[in-house]
Image (cartoon, rainbow, N blue to C red):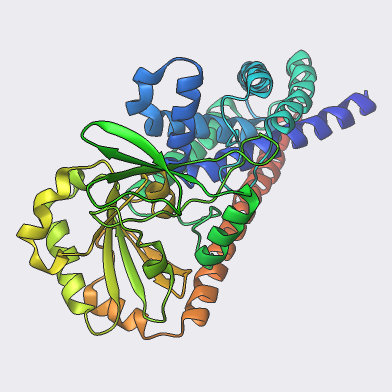
Length: 417
């Protein structure tokens, strides 16, 4: 019996920790989670659900998060052992299909912090399923930690914390970033490695009079063509490689990437991947920001290549004339999760990010005068400390709840002499 309890404890710890961390990291990046969920909707032929990808991602991540906490804590085991087994069975079947047919490149199980191949993801789910089955079989053997109401309240508190935190991040900016454009990322170096890794240039898609055509970097079209997107190119062995993409063009299709990543003067990028959703006051803020930075750096407003909404923006806001540039939608949303977010570049390195209208022009001017290396280190260390302390706090609360309930509930269950 002691051996069974020991085995069950190990299985609960493995299953609980993986689900807690998986849910937590996805909750801290709801936009990225929504993008990944949209890919799964396509795989399952549920493309009509794209509009629900972000709220569905928050809901699913919260379910993972609280299920992991419940299993680890041994709380409401009869219910959550069912939930855990159903979720893990679904994940296992889905990832087997993805591993066999390779419709997406990365599962997104842990957001951007850990990237697994499709087969690694499937093997991970086999291990978790092997944990979930015995937990489910012995679900009736686990003793309650606290009264039913107290256990449900504990789970509800963590669910509310997860949802509220994710919604707050969605409307501001990710507190934790691990993607290609996190603070401290050298974009110039990433571009060089991307092209080298691919062993050949990317293919650039341009459009003219409703006709799309492929071009190489050495053979770009004239200004009558409109840039649409960059696509991956096969390597020498015929396989498709994932290539880092940061292709930015002007209205005529001319390349602006080197202007943004090169030079010693700071670059402020306002990323409007849905410019039609920005209000008049947002554009006024961007215009004021462009005026205030004339003597310090250069501002660009990045919008999707195929978006025609910004045609009249330059006329309405003269300070933005020549400042609007175009890029691929996925690149822009990877660069800045909030629509209208601000990214501070210097010498090709991402120094700092901000949410929409989050900083006054004067504050940004002060930021640009600070030492860029010191600022980058401060931002990176701050993010790292936040997620480390957040995870530590979660597990501290779990341990404290278990300890306190063990004392109180243990005393209540003792027979009166």
